[in-house]
Structure formats: structure tokens, C-alpha cells
Image 1 (tube, rainbow, N blue to C red):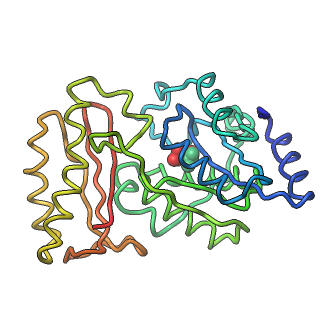
Image 2: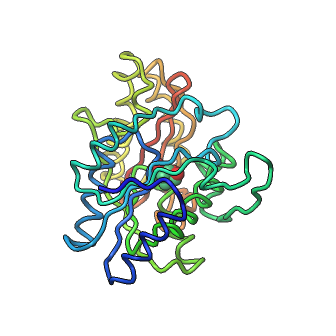
Amino acid sequence: MQIVSSAAAMQRLAKKWQRAGTRIGFVPTMGYLHAGHISLVHEARRRVGKKGRVVVSIFVNPTQFGPKEDLANYPRDLKRDLQLCRAAGVDAVFTPGDAEIYPGRAEGRYSTYVVEETLSLGMEGVSRPTHFRGVTTVVAKLFNLVLPDVAVFGQKDFQQAAVIQRMVADLNFPLKVVVAPTLRESDGLAMSSRNKYLDPEQRAQATILFHALQAVSAAVKKKTVSAAQLQTDLKEFITAAPLARLDYVEFFDPETLAPVAKVKPGTQMALAVFFGKTRLIDNARL
Ligand code: PAF
């Protein structure tokens, strides 16, 4: 497994593979890998085959964190990440520093960003106003360096995947975006690097997100329900976990992400819940 830290070296390697006709599968991450990330690696391998190359990037992207968010404390464990990548059959891990991805930013000389202007406005875009600008910018840059044929993202970040798919279509990136299912702990909690922040009590109550998704799925199987009513009911439902604070719960069309008034099977539901300073998200097609 190759470990590449310079942007130029990553692009050289990708171009070499491209010239040889080798397909490249790519899993962008911020590290602190868990089984959910590894399932994306396996999906990338399935897509490019044994002869293809799978690249994982590990980069805690500063531009997608707001000023009051957890950038400095974001969990990092490169040694363990590299072991997991090696065991999963990754061909190259790209581990750039900030200056490789944002040359001149520390000196105020970086000034180019990619902005998606529709799908990124609701939900996460309301709670984290500069988040998607950072995501689309870094993902576009990583695509230019890794030159993937296939890039795999997790369904847990449903809105992120939709924004990236739109960016890829709008900017003619020559690659396929694959969205792979969310991996869950045995009690239903969606796997996330941020679960590490939860204390034991918060961790026990964090299943409330999954239970909310299940409860609404069951309710809409029986009858169409108004989104406003469900939002009111869910505020009450979440109080069963006294350490939880609901940030948002939204019901929307899975293609356009436009909010719907009536919730029925096929509607997408997403929610964000705080436990102390830790913010967890989850979603499901009802
Ligand atoms: O989903 C993530 O881990 C990040 O948002 C991503 C796509 C790696 C961009 O930094």
C-alpha cells in the first residue's frame, strides 16, 4: 500500500494508472475510520475489480467546519487508519496536509471555492451555513488529484451525497458517484467517527435517532401523515432521551430535497440531534 502526502505525487500516480487503463475507485474520508468506511472501501473494490486501484484519502478538511465546531478536537488516529486500509486491500492512502490542499490559505492567499446553490441550502445548510461550500470544494479538489472513475460516499450523509452528485453532474466530472448503505451498531446507532465523543449515558440514549426513523416508518405505512404533525410529535418523542436536543427533523423528496407537506412511503426523513456538543445525524427512506 502506498502512502502519498503530496498533491502533485497523488496526481502523478493517478495519471500513471489512467494511462495504463487502470480503473480508480476512491473513498474520501476525514479519517478515524470505522467499519462504515471500510464497507465503502469494499464497494469501491467491487466497482473497479481486482485489477483496479482503490484510493482512500484521509484529510480533516478545515473549510467544512464552522468557527464554533469541532475541527481542533476532531478524532485522529492515522496509524490505526493505515492498518485498517492495508487490511481492506487499499492500494494508496492520500494523506495531504492543509498546505497541499489549500496552498497559501494560512497566508490569506487561497480564494477559490465550489458552491452548490440549491440542494445545500436546507437542513445541514441551515445549521452549518459554510459546511457544504467546504465539502464541495475539497471533494472537487480531491477528484482533480485522485482522478477516480468511481467515488463512493455513505448514505448516512444523505444531503452531502446529493450535493456531490449534483456537483459532479453540473461540473462534468467524468466519474460515477456511488452511495452505499449506512452501517449500524447492533442497537441501530449509525456508525460515525463522532460517536466517540459520546459518554456512556449519551451513547445509550443516542439510539433515539434510529428509533425515531423506525417509528415514523411504521406510522406512514398505515396512513399518510402531515409533516408538521410529525415534527411536533417527534419533538415529544425525543424527550424520551433526556440528554438529546433536536436540531431539526425534515421530510423531503429524495431527488430534489424539497420539503413535503404530506409524508408517505418513499418520502425521505432526516434528523440531527445534539448530545451535549456532539451533533449526530441520520436519515431513512420511509
Ligand atoms: O463525509 C466526509 O467524511 C467528508 O465530508 C468528506 C466527504 C470526506 C469531505 O471532507
